[in-house]
Image (cartoon, rainbow, N blue to C red):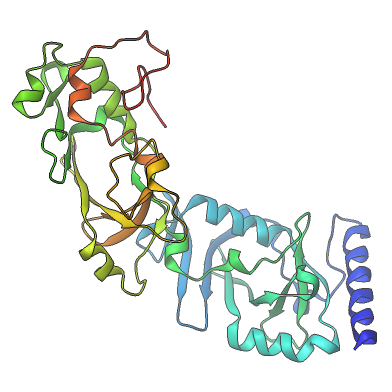
Length: 362
């Protein structure tokens, strides 16, 4: 056993040395038909297909309007860029040694993700399988389609394994935008808090495009009158508002949402006529939760519910996502805030809960 481990370590060291000492910045010394895991010019790639044994599969394609997943969803740019960078920089370090050969091949056959790479004309460039982590938690088992020999593959300058970057789960690839709307494109936006009409409000474009806030009469009857500057600032908060991730397909998800208390709903009407609707629910405290009483962003969280994260139903009730108070707290304003005078100069610190003067983003 000890001799086998020494043999594996020697192979790894020699393979790494060859990788970094070769002229050409890490070109693989192995037969490209057996170990050609690299595409140096990723601008030539037009499509990626990934399929996992459990049935998950995604097709990520380059289009004139950007990368698209499964022909219907915008792709998450960071995920696309990460995988393209990986394919450009990954290279075979050394062949899998005999001592690990059977386990590596079996793992690739039963758990490996199939990766097909196509050029912009639809021609297949490469097909290979991505397995699990190699010895010493450094490197990833991979094997070209039709090859007899699997390899340990690593990305130049990265220590670890590459398998998570080759996810075939749709939720990992979808763009996470909830709102990304320019203020001049908004006709109206309404935030209705469940069971709290005195905090709910609607901001509508009035004459000359100036914003008008509607709320309960007792709120609007404030002696300070409506604060137009705050209303204008509010419409700027809907740029680059993203969710943390998709929850579609998780077991018991529907039951969990049905039993969760509702936080609020957001209705936005664009000048184009398009309507966006979002329903938001409190999330029960779980292992990832912090003490809800310690949060300045959600001091109204019900007992036993998370103050940092919530559920949201978006895209015409098609998708369930997780959102963060940190991202949405600018949107979660209260009606009375729009009927108060500014008590500090623009840009100066404000009291907790006040709409910050001049703030336009998170």
